[in-house]
Image (cartoon, rainbow, N blue to C red; front, side, top):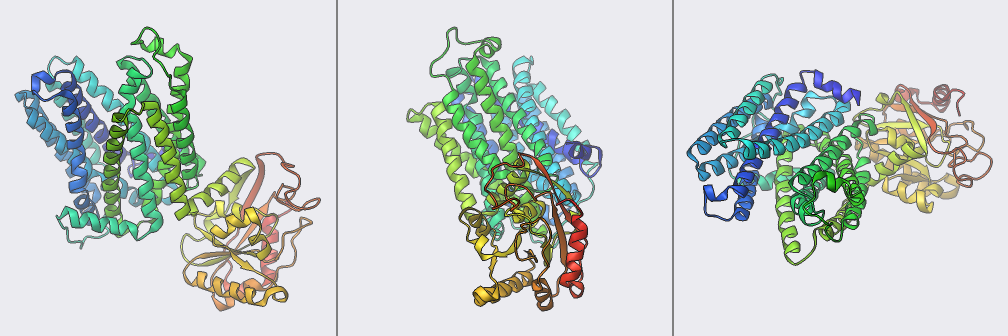
Length: 626
């Protein structure tokens, strides 16, 4: 994780990180302080019931996301994001001044207005926060940057919530809450002055102030790329899921665990630490690249540990309630609950960080901020719907542990739905799992695979999982040309069909399929895709390379594109190879975590891509390690 923490030392990230951290901290400091005051000192402020007030405050804070997100996205696409960040921080200082007036005058209406403006502050900063990262970070830094932002945001939420509660309860006069917020806002502004310029991608954009039409238009931009839109839905669902759990912590701690007020802080801290650690681990588990294979891994954990939390929850209150923090930790049931909450946060980090990075990477730069604004709108909508659904279920008599179980089952259903629409997520997960369980993959020269544009990849053919290993090493989807018999294999064939592999047959067996394969390859290359082919035409049964066939030469004569040579090493003798008999006949004959390697050579010009020349290159890349 050293590489991502190194970003905290560079100017293109550190000032922005400090700005967003202090902003999230201040939002939660003021919001929680106000909620605590309205809960425990409501009579001093108004005759409205405390329960109504706290829900009113939550609604007021989230309302600007619906009203102004569309405008915020337009502004972030039209103007320099660094300048916008500084203006937003100046607005935050003014908001804290309004809060100071509200506390000084003991005016609830002024304080609620300040809360609404803080929601506006977060709304305006949201598109800047995520759209600026791809402008200042390289692609291999994007996951690490997003991981730090997500971890920092949740830590800021935790610390800000605790600080707000302490200030509201400990200060002689609540005006100190505003003074503290004012200091934090000033520090945030000073940090923002160090953010490097981020030129606008669409300076000619005409800003429309109509929230309804612009909201619909922004959602339309997001829907243009199916993967991006479903990633937005996935992020929105995660916030619904997480907010549903967080909202139940006070009642769960009191009515299920039998704890005191401090136990709520314990639950929040464990959950937050899990998210922070999961976010930071994403960079290491994805080798610095955007690895969407972690998303299904995260959704599996969110489901399993959500269900386990429902079963782990005590069915009756322990004796001596309310228990002190020490008394609660003395119960063995508590530790299973805390582990489940930590795991939920951990897998939540695996789930959400790659999705944010994927949206940033695959959104068109000129409308990236507006797409992120659409994400903010849908995220807020999902959270409101989730809160209403939870309130309705609890009102009908459902217990909090049962609510957790229902949410976990719904999470599984949502995951299956999304992965059925975009199989790329699950396919990347299978490839990622393969090279992190059965194998340990070492890559060399992966940067030679072009980040955009068409190319033909060629490689020696050692095992049935060669395409998955190559796919795991590539940042881009690859169309594999493969023997039709492998394509039709029940289990592996299912995976390859969803990878949009291209089946091919020898002319003597099926001349029509052969011609159809070459036509599909030409279409794929014409569309700018990567196509991979194994020129030997078969999986080796002796560990050595068979003569390369002329299919690659025919492909590049029709569509002149670069040819990228690759060499697999270490797969000979593994479960999926044909050493000592048929493949997949001797389970784990090399054990788990056996070392393999993929070496990528420099591109070969199409006119030089003869079978003999390509075989010579691949043989050299492979060396003596089979």
